[in-house]
Image (cartoon, rainbow, N blue to C red; front, side, top):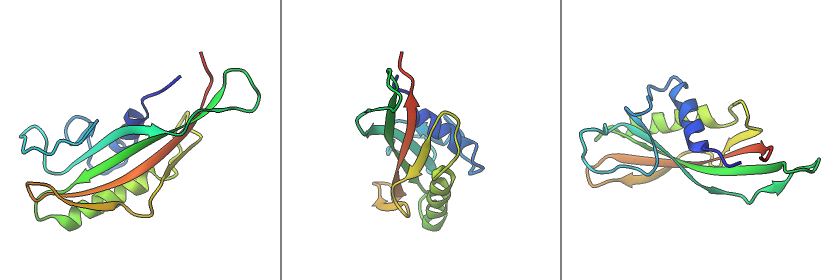
Length: 139
């Protein structure tokens, strides 16, 4: 059964001591780049983006091994490059190889967050990809 891995990763980030809080500055889904008062400059977005095809799991039955890919994007405040970079690095550290219930392995694909550049409001962006693997017991 498919699961909302992005929501699981957001929960891990929210409990990671980074000052991220769901709905306040931590969001599920695509990034929001507009100057919208409801989204602070410093924000993190987690989006489920695909993954590997399910693989049959040893032992038969309907068990499958699934790997889901998520993109994590971090945005800094204007003229706060270093603080944004520090948050992106800390988010990567929180997620890489975290021991999370029901997941076999969670790992970051990059050695460091990728700097994307600035948006139309001069806020800096970083991104990295997370692969989360689990055993699906089937229905």
